[in-house]
Image (tube, rainbow, N blue to C red):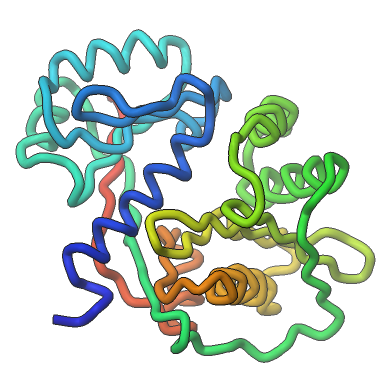
Length: 254
């Protein structure tokens, strides 16, 4: 069995993802058999149920609908959810709105990208830098600018500190053009919030930022890198040596 697809290693990757998302919002903590996070921001990705490993679906749903009242939210279904959850969701008017492959790479086998001329990768370590970082990725992801201030508040309130959570900013021609973050937990290096401004895509910026996060994880002694890929990022990660090891299905109330 390949190391990346070993059940224990996949479980570590899924646990890393749960912990990262649970960092948004003080209400986002483990319940009896399921995990929820609530940022309070009106963006579906920033509120949700990450998994339902046990307990009553009905009870979990009732709690979720109460906790997320007035907010868009997602229910993530992956290998860390018990069988039958998809059927339960569909029978309660949920529909599948997307999926995200969970990808992994050995950190000693990452295919390093060619340098992007003029790109400077910096660690974000002050409030002004964090504000710029949030503004960049919300623009890159097409999130309503009216939500930026609330997202910054949620980001600033995350309880983790370096080296568990390290944010990276890519600067080119005096402008912040891309972002990434390393989340070290459960023995793996999780990469999140990889973004590039639309007008700067195709220049290898996201690849460089991903590589910087992975290198930081390797310097911490970790051996596996993991991330959840968007359709836009998938070919980038495959070129770096990532392979799909699992998949999340995302559901929302119809």
